[in-house]
Amino acid sequence: MSQAATRNRVGYDEDITAWAEEQARLSRDGDFAALDLEHLAEEIEGVGASERREPRSRLIVLLRHLPKWHLPKWQLQTGFRSNSWTATIRTQRIEVEQVLKQNPSVRRALPELLPQAFQSGRGAAIGENGIERMPNSCPWTVEQVMSPEFLPD
Image 1 (cartoon, one colour):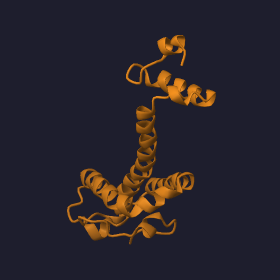
Image 2: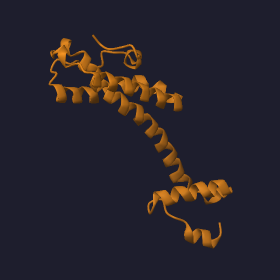
Image 3: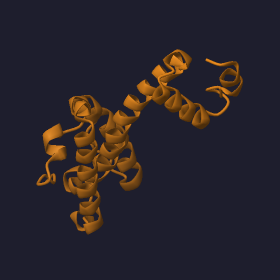
């Protein structure tokens, strides 16, 4: 790397956006020796972690709304079912599927993500609706949660 390039090099901790643009330019130019490999590896791992967080976030919303359909069993009135709940459930399922199409390897993580998402969704559902008898663990399978036809009775 030239002395001018060394002087102009942006540090990872100084400005991550400028650093990322520089790393992309260095990669495209084939200047692999100048790459910040340690931080590049961290960022690549971060992308993978981010791609796992997206379906988890969507599942949390989904699992906050699915219990609302199951409320009669868990002590609330059926009359509160609304079209907006149905729309939210449908939208979140579609969004999870879109993430999985872009990142098929994340599908393997769904059985691991489901209990975590249920716990978060459960807490929100209890807080929003005062459900006291809601189970501690997810009563549905990944297949049920993701099925466009499934609404708990």
